[in-house]
Each structure stands twice: as C-alpha cells, then as structure tokens.
Length: 527
Image (cartoon, rainbow, N blue to C red; front, side, top):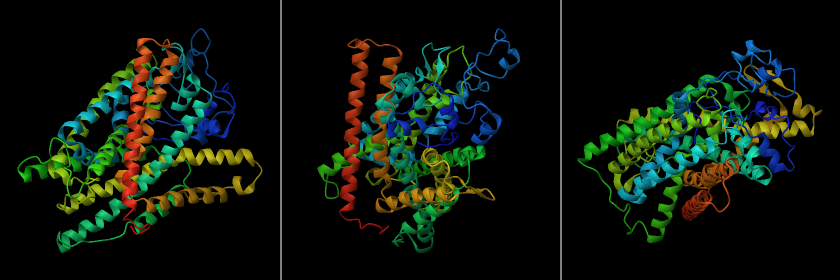
C-alpha cells in the first residue's frame, strides 16, 4: 500500500467539514476522528495554511449552490458541498488506483508464488483481486450517506465509518489505521536499507566475482535513512508538495518494470520456466511445518500488495458530480484498475518464480538472484530508496498531525509546543523536533531489531486485510443499504467477512511464526 500519485496526509479540512460530528468520547475515538487522507489530482486542493488564511469561518459548511439559491456564479466552480468543483473521471480514478496499488509489495510476489506453486499461487492472486474488487464496490456505495446522488459526502474512509457505523467501531478503525501506518513506516525503513545495502553488494559482486560473500550490515543504512527522515519531518506540509507524487509514481513503475524485465531475461537465459505445481518441496532445507507457515505468510504478502481500500474514498472524492453517480464511476474504475494491476502482478510474480523457482528471494531486486547488469540493479534500488523516502513521510504525516493537535489542545499556552522558528524550508519547534525525531528513532530501532522485509510485509498485509478491506466495507454497506438481517445477501456478506477473517488470522500467524523462527538464529542489531 503506497502513495504514488496520492498524497496521504492528516487533513484538518476533513475534520472541519463536519460541524455536527459528535465529540469523540474516548482517546481511541479522537484518534480516529483526526485521521484523514488527501488525494491529489482531479480537483484543486489547498494546503492547510492556505485554508487557514482564506477561510474566516471555523467550519466548511456544505452549501446550496444553484441559481435558485442566488449564487449561480458560484455554481460554475463549486460542487454541492461548497468545495471546488471536482473534475475527476473514470480514467483519472483508475490511474490513481493503479499508481496507489503498485509499490514495494510487488517485490515479494515471486517469493509468495514460490511458496504456493504454479496452481495455488496465481489462484490466490486472482481470489484476492476478486475480493478486493468486490469489497471496493461495496465501499464506493458508502461515499454518500443516504441518496447515492445527493446524499451527504464522506471525504475520508474514517468519515464513512463515522457516518454509517459510529461508536466504538470508529475508534477501532482509527487504531487499525494508525497501527498500519506505524507498521508501514517500519517496513519502508527496512526496504530502503536493504536496497542501500544491495547497491553496495552489487558493486562488490561486479568487482570481486559472484563467489565473494560481500557481507555488510544494514544498520548503518537504517541509521542514515532515519537521519534523513528526521530532517524531512521538519518540513511543513511535506505531504502537500505536488511534484513528490509524480516522482513517487515514476520511481514505483521504474523498479517494478526493471524487476519484470530481469525476470523475463533470466527465464530466457534459463531456456525455460522453473518451479513446480505445488511450490517449494519439503526436504532438508524446508520442513513440513515451515512449508505451512511460509504458505500462510505468502497470503499476507499478496494481501499487502493489493491493499488500497483505505484510500478509495479519497480517490472517489475527486470524481465529478453525478450523473453518473460517483459510486457507479468508482465501480468501473476499480474493475479496470484491479484488472490492470492483476495482470502486472501476475507477470512480475510469475516471471520471478519462472526465473528462480524455489530459490526466488523475498525481495526480487535485493535477494541477488540477479547479478548483472549491476548498473541496472543499482538504478532499480535507487528508485526504491527515493520512493520509500517520500512514502515514509506521507504515511507518517497523519500520526504527526494527530499527536501535535492533541498536544496543542491540551497545552494551548505552552511555548514548548507552540513557538516556531523558520529556518529555510524547515519549521522548527522544540516539541515538533523532539516528538517527530523520537518517532523516527522508534521506527528505526524496531527496523534494526526486525530487519525481515518479507515477514513485515506479510504481517502488515494480514493485519490490515480483513478490517480495512473487508469488514468495514461490508458492515457499512449493510447499514447504508439496510440489508435485512438474515436475508440471503446478509448471510453471504457475513460469510465472506468471516472467511476473510480466518485468512487474515492464518496469514498473520504464518508471518509471526517466520519472525520467531528467524529470531532463533538472528542476533538483534547484527544487521
């Protein structure tokens, strides 16, 4: 799950757009209320500072925009909620989804298929694609509360949960989303350090031969990544810099395409496809228990690669007003983009497995199945590093903003929290510098303790798949469409939710078991 042409940020405008929202009754509910995502493209977006300076009122209140209301001039450039007119289409929404989905998760798909084999591997990818598409169409129906054409808009995933479900489920959703963001930050730290290490090793292999072990620790690279992130975290509105989204999209497609190309080239060099129908064989290197755990972890890796539900509402909020309804356009965009992504994933995962068979690495571009051309591997890994540097900040901004708003609300007169010093592009305050630096240090230390990219990716995919991709969309759709309890539709939706819950639990168990197994021989901070 990554940013690409999306910028995910903590959005106060999202919170202000609901003047009648109840005050959170618990810290968890407050966390949920503060979490928001902003999608670039399809409409003009203002930064928070621009909003603060241009709006004299406290709330952005939905307004009647029409000739009858006496503001016909505004109707030409405002939508029914008083916001700038949305101009997104089927094609822009599809592009947003494709660039949002395709990211670092693609690098572990060859390993995932290697665990499952030529039959179960592609079948699992198709099943996850179908479930993701179906639940995304359910979620799209919840963009508006009430009438699908004129009902109240929900600007974020959290807004939709709050409008349709409310109560403790809002707090639960907030906890899951924040936990997912922290996990993603740790995963990006690991992935970036592994790519930095791979660049060094690629040069070593090219110079000294493939037989040289070229050992090195990833810890210095994690520390370097953390130092850069501490600096980046002091840049105000980092997630609102529009051209970073374009850079991230280019980098994502660059390393994904290089991985696919190298897989095809290696398969041609091998003179055929490697692999088997059932995946990795049980033997001296792999026990039957490990085979089971790895197969379950593979499901988590595939789920991680397909995760985009938590930003679907934000993408839908860029689509122009009906007719046709935003839900109708979003359903078609989801169908097109999931089909496109699945074809690309099938090619990357299957060609990686065809190239390496049982030896497919958990990260296609850093596991050194490929040695040459070393410069092309360096280009791919540089693209990964640039992409992760950007995405780390984008995914951490909601966490930063939530804590800082809570602190400012609790101690409004504190100079430690409120006083700010501008130094070039940086906005420094003692609290921001201390808190954000501490968070970056925390994610860096955890990454150094658990530098297992495949395991972390599988765990993140497993933990977020059921609640964010299946459970909340199903529950919101049932509430929105008033599906009768006990009806055939209700039973089918509940069966889907329960089945996916078991899949998530099994995949999480597989990832945790693999981490525990790895920790038996791994020394913390040894790199």
